[in-house]
Image (cartoon, rainbow, N blue to C red; front, top):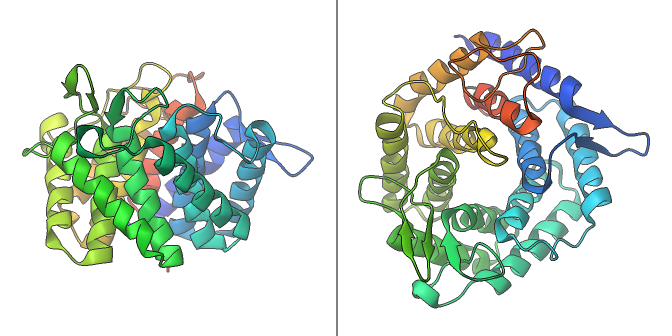
Length: 330
């Protein structure tokens, strides 16, 4: 599909998603209805994806409303959330928003909450890494990969060496403990029970993103080699080059694939790893083909979307997938 056609589909998909799920309040705030903490942060990232691929001022305004709506509900201090990954997803969204729009509040929040999480989650148990929750029992890919991305973004913004040092240390731990030789990114390491080797698209995705950032920041080829290994495992082993139809259950999983889409797109367009593009397009096309009459796409992309999808989060992944197939706008 040519770029203009894909752009039209991505725009229609996003505007249809917003029309169905976004509540625009009179006080200048807004929110995705029916969603809780971290999916709202990640849907903000879909908005940032749209900005990166279009530079449409509509998305700057939308991001501002979503951020203010988040703060209206959760406040400006997120330390009471026991999930370190929840806070880190929002930290990434804020860092990306600052890079795009240069509004100081985004940078203040990103730095404040990255440092908060690092200080309470890093330990020497298992040789380093970040704990998932404040109970400090497991160290998960879902916090360590995003933390590398957040620290890399903050280094790009501030040039503060401590962020790059922490990104490198967290990444090295994740490679040592949660990255298989075949490219699998394992879910977590429990201090008592050991390794949980379950794999998912969002952990594969954040590892790919973390690897690309560190390759760009350091020039070391090991990072892009790891990204390719993780991407190969996802496409060729987890999905046999086919359509992604799983991760449709529960509260968390339905939006996972949008995170993979985001960072695989970065690998394709910024590292010229184009062998994944046809697979990305195949999935984007299948999702769009199976949309409902409202132009919403549920997360099982090879099956028709019913007229009343269960949640916004589950429909957000296909929107991210459409934008992932577009080049970045300078």
